[in-house]
Length: 120
Length: 282
Image (tube, rainbow over all chains, first blue to last red; front, side, top):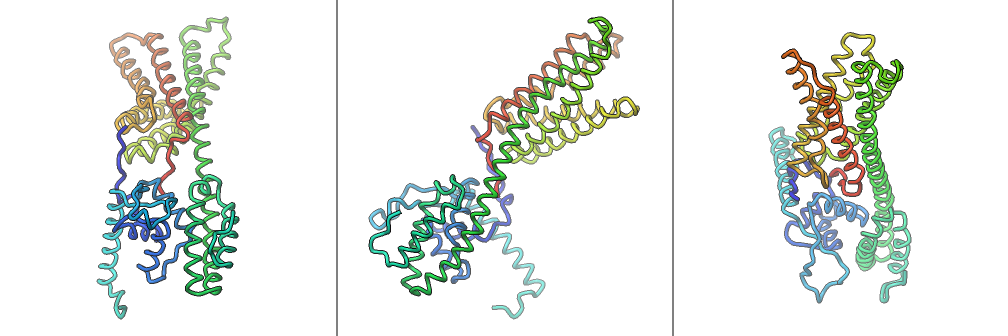
């Protein structure tokens, strides 16, 4: 049965949790705790997801085919067999890309309007 | 749950408490993600204890409590909405089937009244009442069925499919409104007929979308079957009348039956597809 893929733009704007999870999975697959650590490090502790937010988002992202579970274990000897690993799908990558472009457009607009003057 | 060996006391206690609190989530969510959430909480708790001792664990609990309250409410609401939507789609499938039978019965009985001159002994009112009740109720059920069709399948029908479903619902409402004023307003009949025509044409076009995108788990031809007969019947009838003839009763019965069969198949598919209809993407 043929499935039609929804347009990446139809998912935008992403919630902060979904955006950060996709961003954390941009390099390689990760389990839940590793995603949390990555988000914490990326945002310098400004975004701290609880387990409920993390797995609620993962549930919706799996249903929307933005991520998928992976059977691979980067290093089976170092890891707990029960952990589930997640990775971006092709659609997830496109959605992240579209969201980043949307944000870049907003940033350009903010710069043009001098909103960022005196920041950073 | 047994305590983890080697975990410091406050961490072990926290994990036990969190494990108990997971019961607040809906069963299906807990079964799917509960153990993963507990594992993550254990990891974070261990880390916080190592970094900040009891103060770190207390700060974690403050964050986790807020997360727990917010996400349990979210998951319960989402599950509730999903259940309601599934129920609505299921019942609207039955409404479409009932509407198809009532509408066909009303239309065919109405045809007896006008053309066969009361074959069961001049009980004209019987046919008229059957026609009004059958077609009226039938069309109310159509609108309910089409609303359910939109609720359950618009997401996977693409933009065109969603627009066609709105057109079909609008046609159904216009037709129903026309029917209620048919006896008092000269526009009633025109509104009834044009609404019905819009409904069936939109449904037939929606059928092309469902066949192309395989929207249902089977019988994707059903909307086309349901929608194509009445417009064809109208065109054939007008062609015959313009050449001086009249539309045969058997053609009328065939057209109405075809429409009803298509709607029954569509309604059956809607209520049988429950569980396979995905939730809208959040």
